[in-house]
Length: 230
Image (cartoon, rainbow, N blue to C red; front, side, top):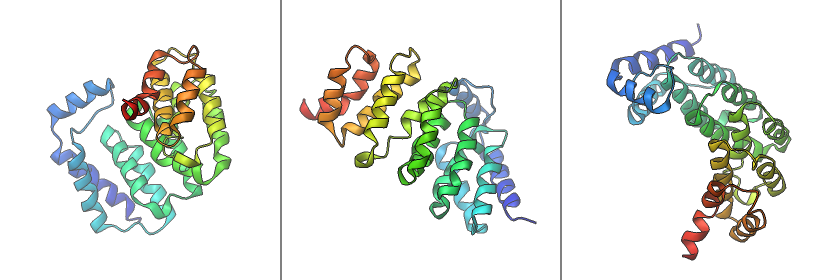
């Protein structure tokens, strides 16, 4: 029998044991979701994951895939958080073949608390290393799924000097017309992060496209620049 199933069950049982029903209600209300929570806060979740790692070794990509996806399919929200924790932790398996795992997670994500981390910390890292995955970002920015459109922006967050500026600019301008808060915020966030690498470019881009960008996007994009200059 695979050792991954007992590992997952251990984490589920520990979260059920330490979870606080009142905290669970608060978390559920904050995320505005019907998905149940255990009521386990981040430090407690990290501690449980550490305990699980001490008893079970993840030595193959197959085990990595099983662990991440089994956790992701859990009923409670913290299991999805644990899946993202595991996906990030085992760096040796964050390889090209893992993109399909991360995409499956993204397609099942329903709010910023999962979408943002998957897009920036998992998918974005692979896009930077394997540029053929940029085609996925091009597909997502045209999706009817608003969270995929947001992901097409946030996947650039950690690229710094390796940012595909042309692709980012094209995506920003393609989505700039949207009224959706989460898209406008993501546009500003992506530009703000790139401004840490190329402040003059971002300042000029915002000025050149003042009428196309929303006030929220402009404000977010210029935060770092204005703080440094001001």
